[in-house]
Structure formats: structure tokens, C-alpha cells
Length: 492
Ligand code: ZN
Image (cartoon, rainbow, N blue to C red):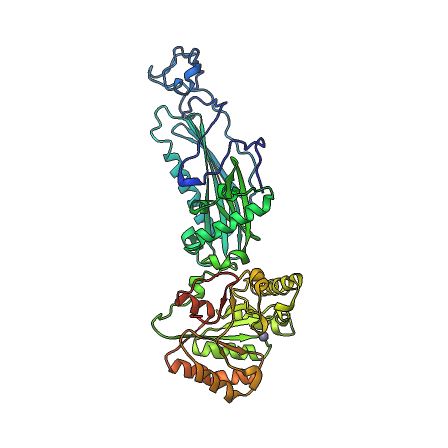
């Protein structure tokens, strides 16, 4: 998406860099003075001989008003206002409310979305009105000031997150100033989400780098060093819009507004919110960081019988685990329900790829398909993309790391349930090797594994362990997550 010069928005720019104010001089500025039309007569305004000083001319009293002032000679003289209109350059997803009015010499127009949900409507309207008030204030002392203010918007969203990007355009005293102001609302939680809560701290630098990479790749014409010139920094997070496909970041390049779309799988480890709208603060429980933690993980499911049984057990003990599911199993008979149950229960759903192939032996194309298919199936069934990938057999190479788009999770405690298929051996193996920060490999397709959990889970709790998801484990242990990086536990 690129807005080009000469399309009616040629003078509009979005402000990004350095938090300063970008000012564009309007060459054909015609409004000399605007006042309340409701209670003031309109006068023609003559400024002959002042052409060189046009910017200041209107502040002075006119020499010869075309007709006598009704009140005092101090009465300022105004030209008729051009009707304030919006050009329809922005896409609105649904109904829209438009307010056109005048206040203290400023002609303004405010547009904001009309939403079905009442709480959301109230929130978006107050956000729009607050923005309007804030910008009307910038016209300062209105004596002798005049101008126009347009606030338009574009909107989008994903899952529980509704996203608006307000577009402010202020014209005053011959200059135009534009700014894009994002507003995001979590419908599930019923509250606005600011950038600080949306993006992880480290995201500012890392997403900026990714955006620069994408920009350089997208326009294909980038020369060496050009990425530098479009580098988006922390300030760039002042202009973004969540859409169904990903987050669109806006930036300025060669005096034009450009944007780049980053998909959710690319972004999700940099965000405090997962794409289905679950805020991580919700999916990460409040736990005691001082007490030992262990992450039980279950591969190769879901299984239409064993998985629901395991889920009941987990609920009974109030613990959470991570499931590395197979895309093609997720759609088996009875399994879609199992996957939905998993998602609803607060357990973590990660990918074990589509069909359990040895990834390191696949061609690039096959590898991408194995990862993408599973991701799409999981998304379709749960409304969330998988948080992590565990490559089948723990086997990976550089290409796997490159295309994972998530961190890779291996393990450092193998229950060997796949080998022994024996409840007692599984119990002995896990309890014998349990330790703080460990990630345990199990398989919820085996009945004996679920049988073993009836002993393992209460015993681990008895020993003081908190049984957690992989995300919780890595979060509480302060492990920085990186897409394509490999994690065996919280410490190696
Ligand atoms: Zn497996």
C-alpha cells in the first residue's frame, strides 16, 4: 500500500521521525480567518499590497470592510469558509459517524467508527473525542488564529483486538501537519491496549529491523545503505494498524507515506498479545518465580480419547502443559474437538508440524509446507497460531531454523514413553530425572502415558514443583525468545 503524490493527498504526510513536527507549507492557502459562523456576519477581506507578507496580513485589521461592522470596529473580518470535506482515501470497515463543526475559529471534522458492541462504541468515541480536544487545543489562543482540523481513521483488527488508526490533519496559518495515532481495544478484556502492552520491550528494536528488511526486500530497488534511511525506530510504533493478515507499520520514505505488512507468525514472539487476541498476561499465570518449575510437553496428538482424559487430569490438579500437535492428526475423527478443548483450557498449543516428517531431510518447499499447513490448521481450529514448533525427532538444520517463524523447542528430559510404553517406567524416568527448568518429552497418544500422569503430576506438586507451559517456564526464567533459536530447557 502506497499513497502517491498528486492523488489528492500529496501534501499529507505521516509524522514518524524524532517525535518532532513535520510541517509542509501550503502554497495555495486561502483561509484567512475563520470565526463562529453561527453568530458572526461574514465579511470580505482585502489585503491588497500585502502579498509579500500574506501570512501575517490577516492578523491586521482590514482597511475597508465591505460593510459596516455591527458591533465595534475591533470586530475581525472573515472570509466565507470553504465547506469542510473529507476525501475518501481511508477504508472504513463498517458504519461511520461524522461530525462537522466550528469552534473558536477552527472548522473541524471528526470521523470515528460505529461499532455494534456498546462498550467498544463508548470507548472508541471517547478516544476520538479526546483526540479532537487535544488537537483543538493546539490551535492555542484563538484570537487571530484560524484553521481546519480533520480527523479521519482506518480500522481493522484480529480476534479480540480491534484496531483504529486515526488520521489527523491540521491546517493553520499556511501550514499542514499530519499525524497517525493508533488505538487498539481488547474486546475480551474490555479495555484499550497501548503500544507498551501490545509489544514486548525488546520488540521495538527487533521489529524495526524486520520492517527495514521487509521494506528493502519489497521495493526491490533499495541500494546499499537505503535501509538506514527508512529505518523505523521506537517512534514508528506511533503508526500501526492491526489487520486480519498482520500488522501494518507505516513509515515515511522519500516524503511519501509507505507501509509494510508483517504477518502474525513473524511477529508473535515480539508481542505481548498472541494473535487470537489472548493477552499473554492472561495465558501466563501468576506463579511463584522462586519455586521450581517444570514443563510437561505432549507430542503427536491430539488423540480423541487420551487427550480429553489428560485434560481432565490437568484441570483436576490446576496445572498447565504444552501440546505439540500434528496438523493432520488435529483434523482426524474426533480430534478437532480435542484440540478445541485444549485451547479453551488454557493449555498451550504448539506445532509438531503437519505430518511428522524428518524436517532436516526435506526440500525447502516441502519444509515450508510442513510448517505452514500445521500452522493454518491450528489457527483454523483454535483461532490462534501455534506459539512454538517442535521438529519431529528433535531434528533440525539451518533451513528449519530459518523457516520456523517461531522458537524451536526440544527437551532435556525424555520420558521414553514412546520406547517403553510402560506406565511404571514412565513414572520412574520422569520422577528420577525431574529438575527445575526442565522440559519433559511425553506423548498423549499413549494410554500408558496418561496413566503415568495420574502419579507423576501429584508427586511433582508434592515436591514443590509448579507444572507450567513452555511459555510460562521461559517467561519466568527470563529467557529471551528468538524465532529460529533452539531451546532444550530454561537453561540450555
Ligand atoms: Zn513426535
